[in-house]
Length: 213
Ligand code: PRP
Image 1 (spheres, rainbow, N blue to C red):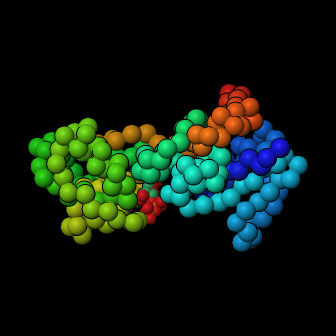
Image 2: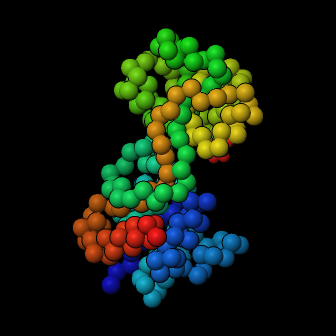
Image 3: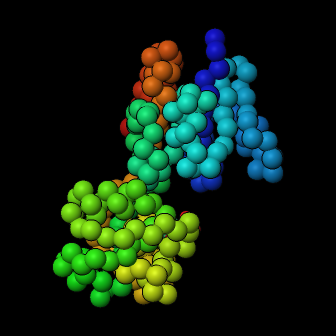
């Protein structure tokens, strides 16, 4: 039996996903050591491998078949736009992609003004404004702390993830429009889905059954 390899977006997503996998008998003891600097973990008995990667790299590993299965947020799947199968909504890590800004920017959105939009997700932002709203905007790519942009005058609005809304509130900003709901997803390499059909289908059905209990 060949190894089935999982790429997990490191951080909270990986931790929750491993807790979920454990409930269906997919375990990896050596991954629980929080101090380890190891990058790849093996379960010899089940012929499984797991590795942690930066979220935005997970779809790349899966598309090229370096991982058969990926666990990653819908935000990253949309932004990376890789060739892979999205097979399951894992139901955790729920949040929303939103257009946010000061209340005053609401009018600029309604008038379809030529505005600046800052985001860590330029593809999602572009798709939303150009294809959904048919509004021409200037997209500015940032790498984090995006809420700063409208505060310091870099952009009128931002496209960013909102979970509790605390970051927005504490900075005098709010949700102006909702782009799409987000959560953790399971993605599968297109060849693996055929070659390892049985093993992968079993994992999906076990997870679904476990989620319904
Ligand atoms: C994310 C997101 C928001 C915040 C939303 O940032 O970009 O800033 O969390 O959460 P809230 O609605 O619960 O306040 P993250 O912490 O990932 O870091 P970043 O700002 O560097 O992107």
